[in-house]
Length: 203
Image (cartoon, rainbow, N blue to C red; front, side, top):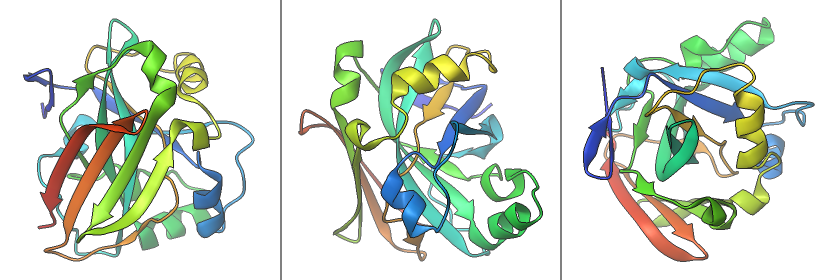
């Protein structure tokens, strides 16, 4: 089982529960329709990587605020990068098929370390993704269509949440393709104060 770091321990999530289409401007930039309900999909443990690995196929980065769970509750926050095989997803969507081939492939997600967060700070979270020193994505919980509290309530109707499981809350606008050698810097803020900064070089 692959792991992530939370409070200096290696934790192995059983799954990553992801939310699609949760920022209005991102929906607009991809030409999608606003969701009538929360869009969920799953990444398995095998999708986790410690390195940002660019697939040979056309691939898009998506930075996200991510939460890790203990005892069924949010215990920590981290920065995640969700990778999407663009042409594969478009092909699957056009046929009304599931997205797993485009979203859940091996090494399709990387995470910063996770740090503890108190419930009262969740709504104050903001993320930024910088690539080669340029700000590409910026988004906050305030910008989300569905807030973490509502996402978690709906999520638990369908999925058991085990210790170490991760929730990715969707990506803001600014997604795009990247090249090997690009330097990614992901940042998480509470009330505009930085609490996480992680860096990856695309392989």
